[in-house]
Length: 126
Image (cartoon, rainbow, N blue to C red; front, top):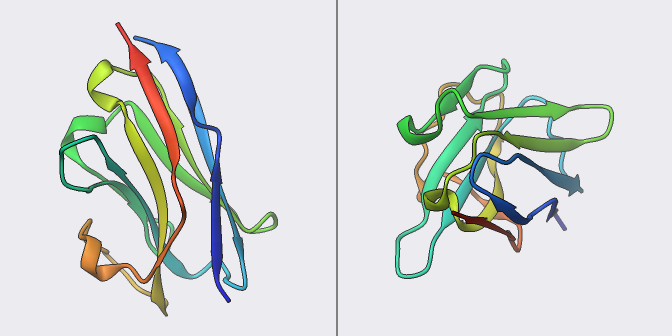
């Protein structure tokens, strides 16, 4: 059974940094598309960043230049480095993965992802 377990969330002030981790089990992060989504209270879940099987990365406009998605194949873990955090980044952050091996150019759409973690809360105060 595939499990994705996020960690690293917390509370920071504006301009601070956090690194989220997503440890996968029964799933190989290498050669798959994986992504981070977030959901703020009262809002829809939105895609933040994705990485494809060739390690190309994709970001929503609001986080470009501030967030970096990466993975460590040896640790079978996905990361999201978040810098210059803003109050509008406050949300529950979810790690997610697609089923298909070798996918390219993933879109940041909820319906394209099969497996989801339970989420980790990020709170940015002004």
